[in-house]
Amino acid sequence: MATIINGDGIVTAEGTSTTQGRLRLGEDTDNGTNYVELQAAANIASNVTFTLPSADGTSGQVLQTNGSGALSFATAASGSLLRTTVFTSSNIWTKGAGTNQIKVYGVGGGGGGGGGEQYYFSAGGGGAGGYFQEQIDTTGVTTVNIIIGAAGAAGTGSTGSDGGTGGTTSFGAYASGNGGVGGQGRVNGANGGNGGTATGGDLNVDGGDGTQATGQGASVQGARSGNGGSSYFGGGGTASGASGTAGNNGKAFGSGGGGGYGNNGASANGGAGKAGVVIVEEYA
Image (tube, rainbow, N blue to C red):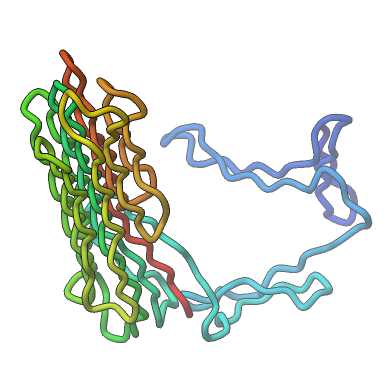
């Protein structure tokens, strides 16, 4: 790749047969060898010149074009989506530049599936976490504490224990989604766990219930453990497919785990629920 400076002061970084032209600006060599690079598209239909603004913009402004290559800084149109952040662990949301409104979506942790003890005990599926959705004016708001609800633990097959309840997900004091209840273990006709509730949102949706186990005891044929409840984001873990196998873990954020299904000589754990999530969309 050649760099040419002609008599008009034009710097040309020519491409090759395999690489487009690039302009590379390195950092202070005392600090290392990293760089910032600008490069042309690999295929350009016609010549184009971008003219940079003559001065910097203000915080939160965006770079726009007039359609003829002249670039300038401008305030983003009200209501424009600026950025989206997904939180899968507890953290602090910090408002970005130019943000005036946010939309928050969250779900509590899914409940775990019950454990299937030996001798053909099948267990219930865990319930899904409650879902909330809220639009918030961020005037005067800088940060918000986020708690992500943990997944409910899988029930233990050796003891036929119930699955654990999922944790509560919250976006500060604005809204929260409770976790789903764990599925039952060693009881006849083990029930699925109830779905969690939600409060504070513009929209609050209960999580789906885990399904009940069918059949119980060594003499019962065709018994089956329960499926994990579906959350707003999707389906839960399925029941164990055969006796002596564990339930499947929750799939979508906030969904429940499937119940375990013990057989005559081997116990089976339930599936764990899926942890919650918070999604924050920031708007101008």
